[in-house]
Length: 117
Image (cartoon, rainbow, N blue to C red; front, side, top):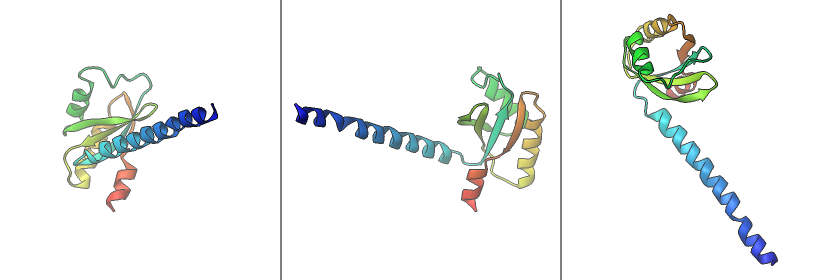
């Protein structure tokens, strides 16, 4: 009886390891999919980012192609500005987005910026 109990307990650690590796792989591939500048946008509470047409309107206001990447936490989301270019272009996009009433803050993704140096 004791042998059967030991044999049944080995599944849990392997399942946990598989789930953690899958989560790490998903995060890594999500971050590398951006071929431009990643930005972190902190929206006002209650902003419905999943609403149809929301991201198209966000890209229109940015004036540059803008892709939703993933949620970070609470009302923070990661986006990708597909145009990789001069810092002045990025500053202009950030200023345009900051003018929206549903955005608290918008800034370059610090983690991705540190990895490029």
